[in-house]
Length: 114
Image (cartoon, rainbow, N blue to C red; front, side):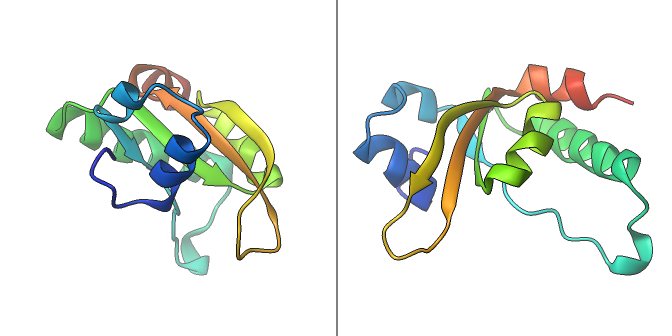
């Protein structure tokens, strides 16, 4: 983030939801895509989140993670240490409602550790 590449960054700035300096050490996280043959429940998701964020922490100076998701998916993100910035956000050009979330990398690592 802080490069003007993500739509989430634009939403945060447009609505002045976070201090812009926070975005300098932040990354946006998104989808986890798994072949249906390998989907085996919440333990696998937890492991994937831990491995992905662990790699991120080792190879970047990022301190925060941001996400936009559906209200249903926000419960999953909260289990991994992210907290809600805004609920029920309408985004121009879309039909659904979104939740904007943020978490510290250290908190996500702790919450997803196996």
